[in-house]
Amino acid sequence: MKHLLSTQTLEKQDALLILDTAEKLSRISDGPIKKLPTLRGRTIVNLFYEDSTRTKISFEAAAKRLSADVLNFSAKGSSVSKGESLKDTALTLKAMGADAIVVRHPASGAAHLLANSGWIDANVVNAGDGTHEHPTQALLDAFTIRRQLREGSGDLSGVRVVIVGDVLHSRVARSNVWLLHTLGAKVTLVAPPTLIPNNLSGWPAQIDYNLDNAIEDADVVMMLRVQQERMQASYFPSIREYSRRYGLDISRVNKMHKTGIVMHPGPMNRGIEISSEIADGARSMIVQQVQNGVYVRMAVLYLLLGGATEEL
Ligand code: NCD
Image 1 (tube, helix red, strand yellow):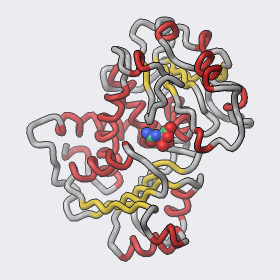
Image 2: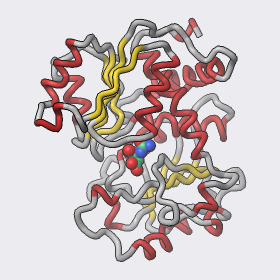
Image 3: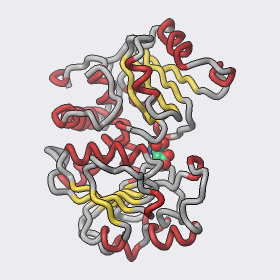
């Protein structure tokens, strides 16, 4: 694997290799010496054209735990705000000796463009491109589910996952649908009809407009943020109405399977898609997701930049 751009094209064996490597790295990271020398002397650039809190620091933490040098490049306050093109920025990063570029961009396809343009020879990791994909988020979600429900090994055959909310604007939902399907899980998407993409042909998922039905006996419920910044029109009558129909509260969680878990990629709109009681409750994996994100991103950087798993 040279790049990690999408989960749609990720082979099952590669996905499992990433998850297994993340398990090994998590055991090392939880030991007395957190840092591995593997990527010493390598340069990883975080190229973020869109705001981010957890994804950016997660990649930074992952790179530093592997002893890489990290350059953080934010579009705000850089020449990008003066209109510099992605190509010119890429050429600058090449000149700086970037070995890997972690890119987040508001345009769907930006990571593919960077990887396939021939402008650079660095490894490219897609950290979210528009409404298209966010593969490391899906991988950390799969890792979290596997650890919680499958003791950290094998695939996710038979796990019932319900993804709820603003599917239309969610790169997290897209990446999860593909990856969870590849790993054998059964995915149901739940949202108001206005927040389900028009063309779902080929998506390996079921659709249900009724959360109370869909959540019955679910193993995992994954809540999505209502992405108001990507909404130019009105997609539902009111926040209150949305919350009543599609918000996660205790009465809905009680319908899940008894070992069922609750997830959210963050940032959360507490009180809209999820109640605080649930976000902070016993079934919530939200903090673990953030923690697991570091292990999974370490695994991705490690594997892309040539680490061999036998050495771990
Ligand atoms: C998500 C994103 O940016 O795609 N957040 C994240 O990476 N943890 C989801 C969101 O913004 O709602």
